[in-house]
Image (cartoon, rainbow, N blue to C red):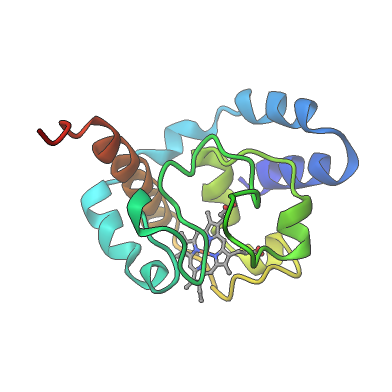
Length: 146
Ligand code: HEC
């Protein structure tokens, strides 16, 4: 995972976005990410101080995290407090990339404005990712209100 993060962040600094995406897609590490969304909901508790997962809740002290996977880091419209490193970032959030980043966000992106120690424990981190994936899907497939 450390190698993956180094590859993603390294190529974001050194090269245009496309080669970075190719590297992320070829990662074999997704099998590590079979987390439990129910447990992940609790892991997300401290994140909720700053982040919402419901689209309609908008941004908090941190950017909204609804459907965050597939988005380029640091580019959400309406959130005006991205740090310089996130503004310049050219990588896409995938479960594997976020899993690697959350081990220690302040070390992975020096200068980030996100004051969080992340989630060092691998099991809890996998649960958190599963939760973030689930909340996006559930809201997206909810039946339309009459
Ligand atoms: C004290 C407030 C705070 C807490 C707690 C916090 N964050 Fe953040 N988060 C931020 C801020 C501010 C940013 C923007 C960082 C930057 O621009 O450097 C951010 C950025 C992010 C991003 C990137 C979003 C994007 O649009 O690219 C993700 C993903 C994220 N946080 C996940 C988490 C998770 C998961 C947790 C819990 C482990 C967490 N954050 C805890 C404030 C917080």
